[in-house]
Amino acid sequence: WELTGMGQLVEMPSIASALKRAITGVITSNLVMPNRIFIHWVWGREREIDISAMQYPMPEQVLRLGVVKARGLTAPHWKVSGASGIDPYAVMRIGEKEHKTPALQRTLSPDWGDHGYADFCVYSKKQHVCIDLFDSDVWGFGTFCDDALGEVLKEVPETIVDEDGEEKTTVRYEKLLIWDLLSDRQSHRTAWWPLYAKKSTGYEKTGGEVLLIAEPLWLRSSDELIWHPPPAKGD
Image (cartoon, rainbow, N blue to C red; front, side, top):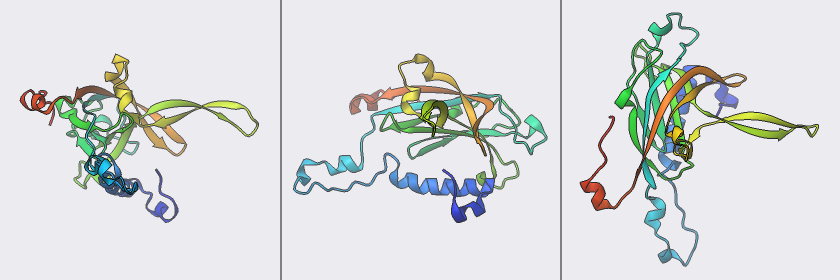
């Protein structure tokens, strides 16, 4: 989403990024799964509806997702030091949970290993998977000064009809969904995904890629899960 109206006055990269993160955080903490507002409107059927289940839904499964490594990253244009000025880290977000990898110094091909893994509760296969890469601010001014290196998106072809009635095929860019990572095609569970950067003319490939490894952990009976939990991985 973009800032409009008076909001364009703060459309500087660092300020706009900090503002968008703050707004996204407020929305996430209230309206992103598992957080939701349940309003009972079927009067006379209060005892037929489990209000607790509606307000606090149970997850369908747990997704262990790892942003293991990246390759082909490019330095921001204003940095003339090349690889020596890049300290990349990745941020993964599914629902209200966010995981941040450590920043690795002076590399265009970071390898976060086990530090790139995190477990996320999945409430719907249509949940968005947000993965962004940043260049850590070495001067210590905070994450709001970190430069964006790209985000993981997918290309979705679509056909539109112009004013003359002619069909044209275009491409729109969307964030990944859970089912993109856990499709029947086994290759999607371990795959390299391209990075895109937002430009004035739209999204463009940066040339960089991120290796994602997705492993579904199906929910079992509570007793079995307590006595035989899956092995821990990551932070």
